[in-house]
Structures are given as structure tokens and as C-alpha cells.
Image (cartoon, rainbow, N blue to C red):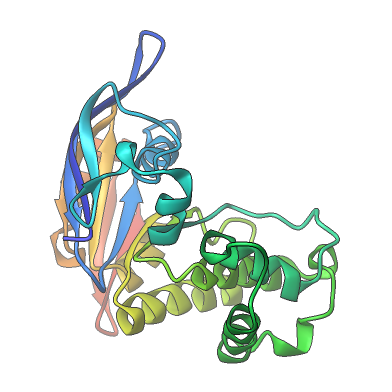
Length: 250
């Protein structure tokens, strides 16, 4: 397993946010973290990449305790994509180049520059290379942040609501790209996602968080009306339409 989350408990002061969370993610898997606002999805992502340290339990990256790794070592294995970030005036090329920092000693090498150029080409971002990130649309900017993460050559890809603020076309394009990259590169991808239909369409497993615990861990075919009701307090039907599972709130 690339990612192993072993019975972690995390608290802000006396408030337990995560309690006894346990799951694993294999290479090439795309896993969705689902649940209501405040269920602990973003906190769990920060525990995986070592930004937060659980009070109890362990997170392993390739079998090593993330809490014992330096930030540079973590960054070589684990890359994060935030919800959105377009405030910088750095060009697209330089934003993606930042992803090479964990591998640099004194400055970017010729290989680092070539790696960035290759990623930009593969993701069809080369025409935007010299534009400032702040000048891009939401979909373009989110794609650049994903490119920066991939420039780290990570084993683990963590995404916090990667489709937030995107229109329908860009939501689908972003999820398709993450799914494709996870499969092709053999990454363990974990994303906090609010849209259940996007998760059902693209993810291998859905982990439903409720009150800081995993209430259900299922493949798309295992999502049931009872599970939706228990986690979200919403009555819904689950239908298979054109070969895909779809949640239809009542």
C-alpha cells in the first residue's frame, strides 16, 4: 500500500475531529473523501501529508511514518492541490517549476526545466506558459496547480475539493484528468469531494466521514439510499443511467 492511515485520532484542543480513522490506498487508485461540511475531510488530508500530527495512530507513506520524515522528504512523496489559488503574478511556467523544489539542491537544473516543459505539453498548458496565474480562468488555474503537484513526481496526490468553483465542463475535465493521471502514473490519489455524482463517476472507492469516523467505505456500486440518508440526512435514490451510478435526491 502507498498510503496507510492507521486508527488516527486528531483533535483541536478538546474537540475530536477524527476518531479511529483507518483505510489504505493502493497505487493507481482514486479515492473520494465524502461527507458534510465539518466532517473532517480537509483535516484528514492534512494528517496524511504530515501538516497535522494525530494524537493517536499513524500515517504511513510507502511503509514509513510521515511524522518521522522531513518536510522535504514528504514533499518528494506527497503532493497537494488546494481548492484554488490565482493570486500570484508568477507565470504558469514558474508556478509549475515550484513543484521541482523538493528535488533541487541549489537551483533548478536543466532536467528540472525539461520536466516542467514536458508536463506543460502533456497537459496542454504550454500555450499559457508565460501568462501570470492570476490572469487565468478558474479551470485553467486549477489545472496549473495540478501540474505543479505532478512536477513533484509524487507517489501520493491529495486534492481538497478540486472541482470547487469550476463550471460543469471543467469539473468533468478535472476529474477525468486526475483519474487518468492516477492510473497512468500509478499514484494513490485521495480527494475531498462534495459532488457525489462526480465521485461515483470517477473514483474507485468512496469513504464517507461522519462525526470524525468512517461511516462507510464502498465502491460506487455499494452506495445505497440508506448510506446517503445516514451521512447527509437526505432521502435519495440511486439509479444506473447509461452504465453509471447516479444519486438523485428526492
